[in-house]
Length: 250
Image (cartoon, rainbow, N blue to C red; front, side):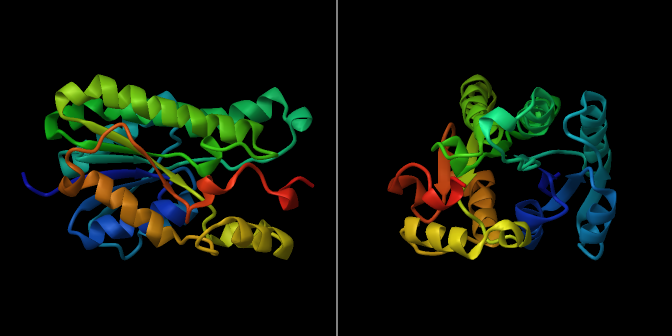
């Protein structure tokens, strides 16, 4: 079998959907995973080579099922893109433990569970793992006590995966997006916040979902055959500019 297959979580929208389309454009098949059924099936409609799987990556039984369904449908897994995530921002003192756990169970537990369930298939294909963290996992910012901590943990988990799975030919890398011009971001970012981000980013703009997808696809491809254990910030240079933004502190 030479047809390559990618498993992409959080594939119903945003970076996950852009990544799905990038793999399909290169001739891969894609198992699209999401827990939002309506959005998932609408996104998959008309995408030749894509197979939608309704599942929640934070629930172990559903993770085992989604991997089994991917293997039943496509016969192999060459790349796992752990993109599913929850963006929940708030002050430290207002972050309840339940709120903390909701972020962690998707952003961190989901990455662990999906990768673990897919490891046998990745050993067979000598495949690749790309975990989607965030610039918030590399630099501190206000209102991100749960989100930023979960993404920093994903970066460390990626290192563990690279070290432990490398002997099987499995590569594990991490992508840390900076501000991305998604519908959600544009809906919640005030003009003041948008201007502050532009001032703080050397390239003076938000990134696009397609720009993130290009880096993810590269890390899963043979062109990155000697790249593992790395975190690539796709952020227009944002990480280089300092800590926090005054416009976000309120």
